[in-house]
Every structure is written in C-alpha cells, then in structure tokens.
Image (cartoon, rainbow, N blue to C red):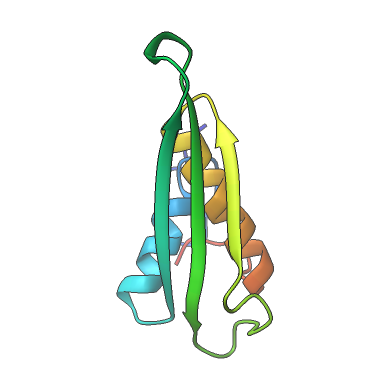
Length: 97
C-alpha cells in the first residue's frame, strides 16, 4: 500500500516512519529508533523500538519518555507500525504534511 504523496493524503503503510522522520527534521519531535533482527536468516523477525525524547506542543506530551515497539517479518513493516503507534499517541491527525 503506497500513498500518492500528495499533500493532505491519508497516511498508509510505508509512510508512517517517513512522516515521523519529517516531524523530527522540523524539530517537532525527537526520538531514538532501535531495530533488531531475531532468529535465523531464513526465518527472520524484526523488532523496532521507538523512544520519544521530546515533543513540541500542540502534540500530546503524555507519551514523552515512552517506548513504542512492534515486531514483524519485514524490517520496514516493524518500523512503520511502531511509528504509527507513536503518531497515534501524540495526537497526529493522520495526514501527510
């Protein structure tokens, strides 16, 4: 699932981490990401952990210091789902800026 990338388009899988990264580039959030592979190469599982270090208002300050994580069979899927959880918890409105 991919978005057209046009402004105002709803976020879809593969866009959540990119939008979170864009928020960080604009100074609206700071986070630390850690992605870890688990299991043998032929049956790999990926875990992505995203810890929120700073959130600028008007986003919710409640998740500050929390770590969000997801596990998936593809690295990008783990990253995007963890990022989706972060965006949801800070009150991001699901629209690409």
